[in-house]
Length: 293
Image 1 (cartoon, rainbow, N blue to C red):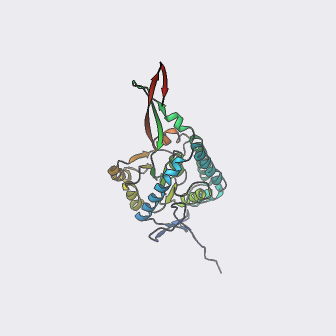
Image 2: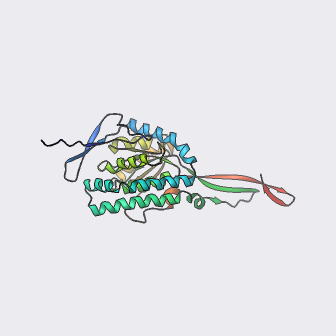
Image 3: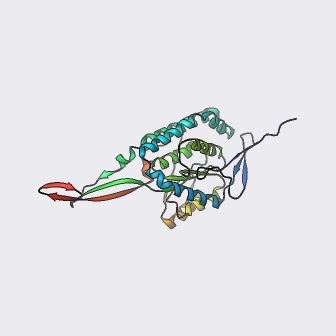
């Protein structure tokens, strides 16, 4: 008798845990042959709100980590990712990619994590400055994380597009809520399993699956989300999200990129999600010498 195949249920990732969606709903993802391949959670607005709470709770401690330690953690993600390359390649091919394209995407995703791991303890020195002023003060500008960042990656680049947006967000001390590709969500949840096995604290990255028309408006209008980052969604999706983001003056970045291009990475992806804090420090003149206090 032929055995009935047990389809894997890909759960969401919130606060370092893998809960089922609050609504109990799911949808079925087919493979490249049109056959049922997996069950995926269909998230609700409540799941988005739960993810924001988890991200906010984790943000302060993550921002206070040393930059060097954040770099170590991103490199650890790349290490764990390397050990599961075959699984990611298989999932991409099951979703319609050729094996050669899948291998290239997985390799570039790992390299991109290593690239941003290297920036963690360097971007602040480059983006910060000592500013000239005419008064008796020192004036310094330095970077601080923006806070909680919503991410809606390129829906046709389910792995590399996600990592290309997520890595600079967390490298800069922010926490994230990711809305995975609707049609190709498998790699996003498998990547959550990689995060869970790495040193990433719970809540730093939260990954949700399901229909964007339900989850994206909630994320863009949420008053405790500081920024929203999207890629290649098109104006018909982006415009309503930008309007919803206005209420709390949420920063909004829409990157139109081919993420398979080796140049689709850089310091500006970290810098966009930083606030610049300026500090004035008085100078005291003592007997012709200058000192600060």
